Amino acid sequence: MLKNIIILVVFLIVTSYTYAQKGVVEYHTIYYDMPNVEKDKDFKRKTALEINDMKYDLRYNGHQSYFEELPRVPHDEFMGKVASIVAYSDRPWHQDAKKNSPFRNKKIKDSMYIVTHNDRMEGWTLHNETKDIDGYTCYKATKHHVQYYTEIEFTIEAWYTPEIPVPYGPVGFGGLPGLILQLERSHVIFVADKVTLNPQGGIKPIKEVEPGRIITNEEKGILMRRARKVTED
Image: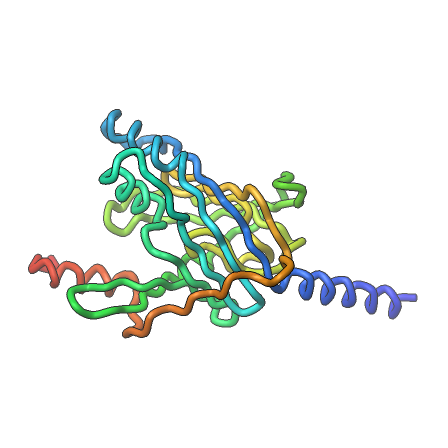
């Protein structure tokens, strides 16, 4: 009897994982005010106007994912660029499931780099709290974060579903026992609108990262300061 139960559990896990090998997730974002962070009211209003209008796609398979902000006509061209930077969606994100690593390209002067952000896929605290998102039972996970250029501390909150057991999520966050369907971080909440598993005809090809030297986010900051001829101190 016990053997049969074990076989059934293994079968369900394997079947579930196979079923979720390929998928597309559509997200939108919501701007919110962080406590104890002062910003110009007009700046907040204009940023919120842009962020609340932004859409995203996450395409994935069993090995990797690709997250990008979708093209749109911004309300204001400059604030549209600012909003993308605030949401960390100004450039696409790649995630490698085997290496548990998120990364994206960054061009500094005339050189292309691959910048890793491994902290986005590790250091989570898992909670028993649950809620329903788009018909999936999601579990809460949190992690402490310090913004490296402002030293502002805040908590990142993710809601992931083990029903889709892939370690991906918006803007490079992941490494959890399931797909992230909602993510709250620094003024921005990413919310899944639609999940399509194994779409007919497959998914659009996942773009490869451009070749370049692999560096950390901290090393990127040093290189950018050097490029601006600003001292590292």
